[in-house]
Image 1: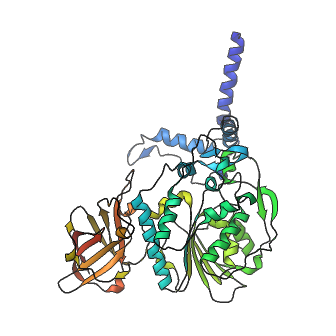
Image 2: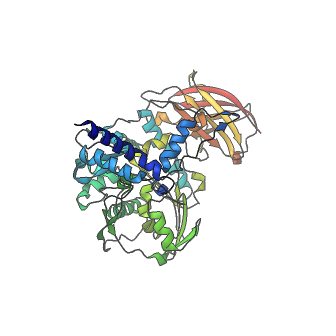
Image 3: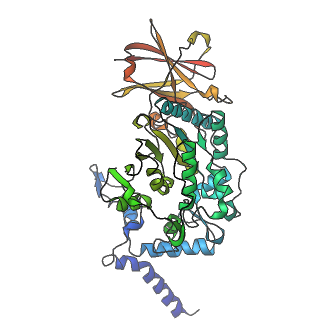
Length: 486
């Protein structure tokens, strides 16, 4: 290679690298490809001192706004995934054009296995929620939508070894043992997988898969409903998958969707948000995820006064028109930790969660007043040390939470946690969620999560004065600090 050619080659490479900076004043970067808040320009001076992190902050700001970024990302990801079959932008490139979220590989290989204590805590917590809903006159069901790799493992790269059991299978077993009403969608969808129920280039199910999920959910809720057996699904190549967008923000490959006619005139949204039924529903069903944290709707065709409250994630988008027209009133809440007290009386409650987010069930406790139980004789238990207990007097009630010693091989029933508040005259027993609440404990524990509990005592209990606190769990009694309730 001649010296002149080397010089020309180096100059060309420098020009290519400098091109985005040269074009920056003239071409705006397409910030719409980011589903997050962009980095802001850093301050030169922060809190009266020179900002030592200015360089890293500037790099983040520049990377978000550099011209032609979408095209460069698309080209880089194409080389990594299509040619070298390497994960890129949190996407696994599978066989025959199938894409998977990289995060679901942990469930696939069972490398994120929750402890037995966590699995049992999740089952007990869901049983407490179901008890509350049924006591208020509603029906309950819990549904885990399986990861795409759980239904279509055959397209995963061979370098990922599928485990025989994972969090989903263990939790389903625990829910059966705890007699919690739930839907085994993995079995239902796997049995009909040949019909094509998930997108190839999207992490979610398509409308055909969602229709199977809808019928299973309504069956579990014992709700009479239209099955849409006679519905005509049109297969069209009109869907741009979320995984494809991650790989190719400048434009990639379209995917198939099973379209069906939606009667927008039968739906009325009552808050929040603006726009007509069609405009708002199409926005909610897209992956824009804008203004969809709380969706309140009415059906104009259902007249029986029925009510649905559904906690959902992104998989619930495809269910919206079907679920709305199954009840007179519907509320769809997107949250990691549901407020059970927000569920209206006599409302059915559907708790939907995707498999890769099962750990959210034990990250923090739902908001619900602790159910009152029969009195427990604290003196009949051996007293033990090792519990950490904290209390907060809030406007909504008394919050009690803490950490417990590891309970080892405790049975599901032994994972239940009871709080006994007692004074010289009387005692009261409540059941807590058996969850170590990381947010309340301000903890970032790694590895196995500690055992713990979390409860809110309703102000309607009208407890006043000083009470001793005993925690009963696993056949043991842990004495806690006294609390004063004003």
